[in-house]
Amino acid sequence: MLLVAAVGAQGASMIRQSPIHKAWAASFSLAGHPERGLRIASRFHPSLGAAVFVNARLPKNVKILFLGETRVYYFQRPVVAPSPYDEHPIGKLAASGPDPGTIRDRLAGQGYTHILVCWPEWERLGRQYYSRLWENGEIEATDRFVRTLSAVYSDRMVTVFSLERYATETFPQEGPMIDSFVR
Image 1 (cartoon, rainbow, N blue to C red):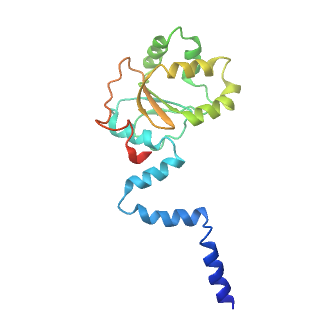
Image 2 (image 1 turned 90 degrees about the vertical axis):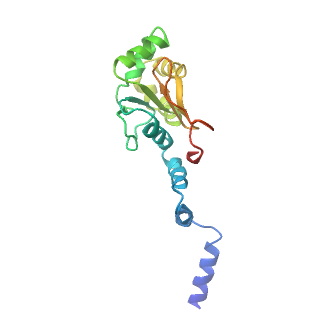
């Protein structure tokens, strides 16, 4: 009788699988398809696709300033990722800079070559932490500034901008700026 109840419960549970069971079952489809694993992992780490792009396509001597992102472990290039509690190098420059070219030159003078923006985190932190720690107008000025830069990589969550006046990074020869398996 107990065995019948256990089998019946297991059959009923197959109708509503737990997220853990779904992940376990899906893991079997990853064998021989590393791009599927990357697609799944990028759901939990929005900057993973950008890391793949940076590591594969940008020179080793770049220095990337993160905005709205602090997870650096997949990047194989020098990065600066200020926490929401740190003073960010871009805030005061953007608010005081007379024009985007001057701000770009000042950041480049500090050794930065690119800016990575994780948009969901930038928006969340702008409403929460940055709104308390940054001076009045710095958030808006920073947002306006980064949107004037040339994007060398973009997906639905992250954009990598170049601080060069004319971006020289190479894009894929066909298709979107990001490999389709990362989407």
